[in-house]
Amino acid sequence: MITGQGINTLSFGEGGLSTHNLFMFLYLEGGILFVVLFLIFMYLLWKKYFEFISDKIVCMSAAFMLGTFVLVSFELLLLINNIVVSMWLWFVIAFGLIRVNYLKQQRT
Image 1: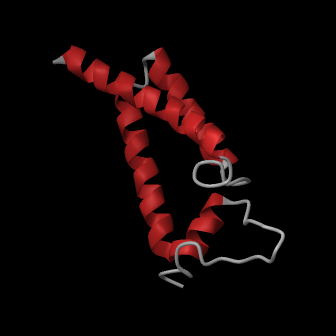
Image 2 (image 1 turned 30 degrees about the vertical axis):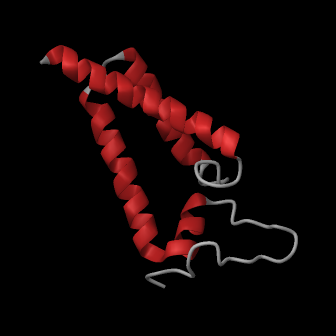
């Protein structure tokens, strides 16, 4: 199953059941391609964090991202299940990336 079932084609009955695992969801929706693209995206975020990991704000945001990465193994919070929680999770991750960009500008 390289390409998955397609976007929004999963049906687990009338009860609105979900996979409760982001990686399984990505695999079923888009196949190996979606999982690999998501992992590459997360790796690139981590690589940006790691350059300034000694900064407190960046370190806390990176730790939050790792904790979120573990959390999404049990719930679909980063993408679809709860938009409000998802926005807050991405906000904290983005805040760390904003700090990284600020520190890069200060260095040059």
